[in-house]
Length: 278
Image (tube, rainbow, N blue to C red):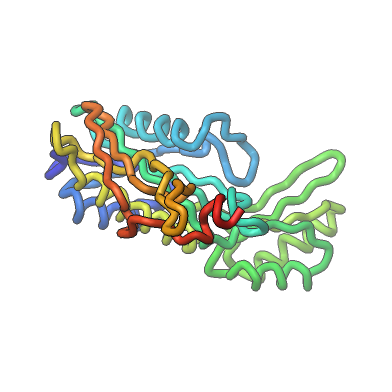
């Protein structure tokens, strides 16, 4: 379905470095980039422009715009968010989405990777020692930094800093001008190899999902969309909250498939039973 077709990668932050080889090898596409494409219009990590839409809709807007600019009917875009992990306390997370749009066949395929592999961090600093300690902690200079200065009348931001002399010079200049200084990790993919590695994992996941076709209509992207709880307790036989089945639904024709006992076990340990271990 995708072999030898042009695929536009909607990025200005060099994500094609990891996306293109995987997608070209796995899907047989020929990847291209849009000229003069500014994804910052949909929001920036550094806060100058707030993201107004959710991550999937933001990726969709970027993808459709890149397809319009290049005349491609096949496009891909990613969108990431950073902050506290939704279920692991005191741990930061990188929540990445990758969206493939095929307007020729009216297909959208979405993949998600929620990873704790991130250096996302920020801190208000007062001394050069604090600055360099922070820099070491977040893997500078292989990972870029941002310095923000603020006072009652002005705000100043320096992004993409990857040189220690430059980092110290900018910090001292901001302090000399009586700015309150904040340092934060630059989460743009081209300045953050850790994030780039998460996007690479996501790209491989997307290729696997595309290669999974619906048993009924043979459209790509057939994948798990839900789970059903109720695995029986091995002691009392009552249903537990553990997964008894994975449910896959085709977004194209609606065909549904249920796979029982996806983890290979037909009963659950009593320690996970609300009746045996309340």
